[in-house]
Structure formats: structure tokens, C-alpha cells
Image (tube, rainbow over all chains, first blue to last red):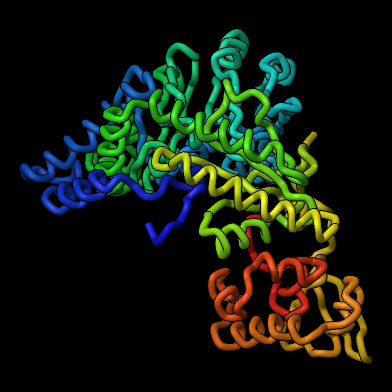
Length: 392
Length: 120
């Protein structure tokens, strides 16, 4: 990591990645980086076994009963597109929430603009939580799926997915969860929670490289094929392979990413998901408490940290969030994410659109002294904003 | 029904605003940034500064504006945060305080640099 940089943009991607993950990933790929499942020579078989082992590991991680129903994709957005496009039929209705990232909002909006679907979005309360009962009220006879952001990438609030799962199961509607921010910090049990599919990314709290993510699909959920091509099997047929996992994977796998993701899971298991989450939440509480008393700083969605991941958003009176980010970067060596965080409706609901806010997202490598330096920096920035008397 | 308007900021700001200044029609975006950096002139910068509540652009302001413009001319993009700090010899917090609109909507806008395409 360059110099004394304090990296607080872990919700975008964890940084740095654990060095053992990177080193072993390169080493294994260097030795076994051939096309998995495409050849009969031993090395190709071994490469396919690497991918299979990663599927099994991910299936255990998400409590997905069938490892073959763990699909590799480019990232969570890619996985969400796979499931959304693969489930909807013309005339369907979808229920989602105003907490969603554009990875959900944009596909839904696109489909509605094409006249193919309609949707309704559940609002969140003043603390950033969705009421499962509201999801139930929005479900209609023609609702094809419910999609919920498990942990908000703006507020950090964790939604009651188990309760929402019960509501959806009672109505016979599959629940899809976007676990981009939760996978790796909140244990996910898709079987117990009656979740139809979990979309995840590898490069955040699973410690893999960017470019790998996926979808864990319940055995009860059938997803139509929307991408077609080579799968390495049934090559005589011009029909795409209908069986999982090939059903939803076309073309050569990102084996380097799969290896990295698998090693990231090993790292996570060794560290302990609860240990990492507890450490991040202790730091978040320290940051919240330190910022809460500063003049001119407004905090969002951090009253109840018992249902939270390690991120929070603030604004500074009198200073544009983008300028706060630039000052933190240049004057204090602190990297944060500013703006709308690709989740415009969250900001619209909070009244922070169009300029958004300043997001601090913590990771497993942050330390107490970094949080204290961040609070000290924000104190100086807030005081300068108050002195300027500029409206925000 | 929730709507996400395409090509329209959430604020509802127009994406283009033309103004006639000194007999010339100048294109600005909805936040008052020049749409064409070549339309910039010192006189227009002074006028925009007055509109923003800054009665006079003094030498310190011009140091910031000149550095930003020179950097943009040389590299085709706005200076990175650390380059701005090192190039001007001031902290970004000081630069923020110099302009009523701060760094982005103040210094950068008056320097005629385009509105940054951040996650907004």
C-alpha cells in the first residue's frame, strides 16, 4: 500500500488483497492455468477439478445444496443480470427495494422501458431497513421474483432476509439476494432463509481478485438460458447445454479468478468470518462515536449497529462531498468513496441527491489508529466547513 | 411507481444551459461548468466569480486557476488531488476555503475545466 494511505473504500473492493492469496493464485495458475473442462489431457482435468472444488467450497459457504448450482460470473452485477434476465417473462412483475444498487435498478428499468415487465420498489425506514410486511404487500399474483440488497452499499444496514424469505415462500415467489456487501462478513444460509439465488462478487469480502463472482442457485429455481456458446460438453448439439452449471456459463471460465476466489475463501475461513465482522464493527462504532460529536457532520443509518456491515455515510455542512473526498485524499492520505455510490434512489430517499455523501467502508486490515486519524481529519474539515458558512 | 429518469440528473437540473456573454453564446452544463474549455476567458471567469459571491479574484485565486488550466492543457485532464496540492503549494482544505463553491464547483468551474464524471 502506498505510503501511509488509510484505505477506507473496502465496499468498492478490499485492498490490499492478502498477499498469500495473490502469490498462491499466480503460482497455481502458472502451473495449472489451462482451459478447464475442455481437454482430455490430465492438466485440463485438473483445472476442471480446481473449478469444481471452488464450486463445492462456495456451496458450503452459502449453504447451497448442489455445488453444480454455483455459477461463475464476472461479478455480482453480471450474476444479477443472469438471474433477472433468466427469470422474467413478458408481462411479469418484480418487487425490489429503494436500497438497490444500479446492478438491479438498471436491468429492471431497462426491461420496463422495453415494455416487458413492471416493478414496485419497497421503501426503507429512517434507519435504512426494509419492512418484510411491505414486501408482502407489494407482491402480486404476477410477481416473478423479489430482489433485495442484503447489505446496503450506502448505509451498511443489513436487511432481515430470513423474514423476507418467509414472506416470499408463503407467496410462492423466489427471493433473490444481492450479497455484494454481505458475502464474507455476514454468514448466509440460503437454504434456511428460503433464498432462491444469491448473487455475489469475489473481490470484496471474499478476498479474491476482481473479475470473478457468481450466483448460487436453489435446486427449486429454474433459470432460463440467456447466454449461449461453448461449454466443453455436448459439442455435437447446437442447443446450449441445459444442465447446471454449464446451463448458465458460456465460454472459457476465468480460471485465475476462480483460483483466487477459492484461496480467498480459505483465507476467510482461517481468519474467521465472525472475527472479521466483529473487528470491523468495533472500528465502525469507534468511527461513528468519534464523528457524531463533531460540529456540522451528519451521519446516516448508524443508530443500530447490531444489523450492520462495516460502512457508513456522512456529509459535512458547507462542503461538497466530492471536495471532502479530495481533501481527505490529498491532505490526509485517506481514501474514501464519494457521490451516489451507484445507488441513486437511496440518496433520493435520504435527501442527499444529487451530490450524495462521503462513505467510509472498513476492511479487515484497518487499525484503531487509522480510525482515530480519520476522526481527527474530519474534525478539521468540519471546522473549516463551519467557518466558511457555505450552504451545502 | 418509482421512476429513474434517463439522461437527467436526480436534481432535475438541465444538462445544458446556454448564456450570451460579451456577445458570444457560451454553453454551460446544468451546474455551470463550461461545456467547451475553449470558451473560457479571464473576463468570463471574473464574471462567474462575482456571481458566486467572490467580489475579486486575487493573485491566490489566479494561481489556482492558472495551475488547473495549465495542467489541463498539458495532460488533457484535471490535476489529481496530490498534483493540485503540490503544484500550488497549498493544502486542498485551503483551496476549498478560497472559493465560495469550494474546489469542484468553485476553482475547477472558474478555471473552465469540465464537470468531473464521478459517481454522481
